[in-house]
Image 1 (tube, rainbow, N blue to C red):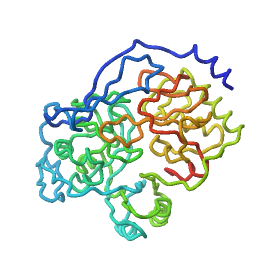
Image 2: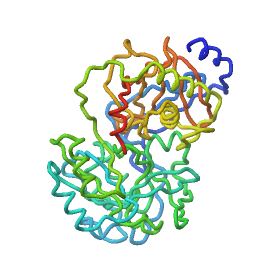
Image 3: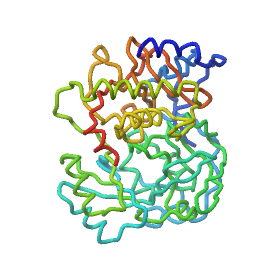
Length: 407
């Protein structure tokens, strides 16, 4: 198997080395000293290797000039926010998100109340949710009341007043991953499409700490796109077993709803071998057969991939159902030390300066310090050495756990 993979190395496509620094998140925001993400002068074989250089304190950078307010963009139900205003009340305390419910059709008020009263649930926040095209890239977006949704986000995101003013003005906040990987033009106005086409300014790149969520906008802007209220609910059950909560919420939400885990599930099992040798070899051969295929944000194969799409497709060839995004794949089995990594394990990295605990990238370990990976926009699926900077950890996939996460 390793000889087969090694023989693919000469096929790796290369590009001119590049070096640039981008502001980390990047909002339409403040004059405070900025964190920067340096994408070092490396060749594409080291594309996942990035270093985060922080200033004395984590802060948001100077903004693009703000756009004009969108009439009625601020929610009338947002406390001291008035229509047309961009002032959003600061979060008094943060709320831990446990699961995200998404539905093809709006949940009834009765269903939302039942979710709120499910065992272990402490808080809920209804949202509009749906897939849209952002500057030509498919994205899962949430339409939110800025004031009510703000406490549900990671600390740096929640504390950025300019970011929430941007959302209340009617601008779009994309995730750090999407902003970087899809090369979205921060500060520019781009077409956002679903039932309707709405030009929307990219006001910020920031993590909302929710696996699979690519962007956030105000509920008013979501309505302009045709997204319906109560097609999603964020649920907090900080002291309950997440899997038990998810099952209880599924029972209430019904067969049309999808319930995704948003926090780590502790797996009380030995980190032994969960996959057979045949499954591992099949999966690795499948991933290796994709070397040279282009990276495309949101693509799941067979002719183009993003990082988690390559993982999902390769495991599917071996008959193993994997969740869709890297943050969910992080939950797909027990964690092991990199020194004990085996072929078929998954490697994960932290790069997002707006949420240092967020999982931003995944690759398949092929053994002998090498990996198979779909790196970033403009690159191709590659067989390359494993970069250890910003490595979050290693997961040994347990099919039983993988099947429970994100479905």
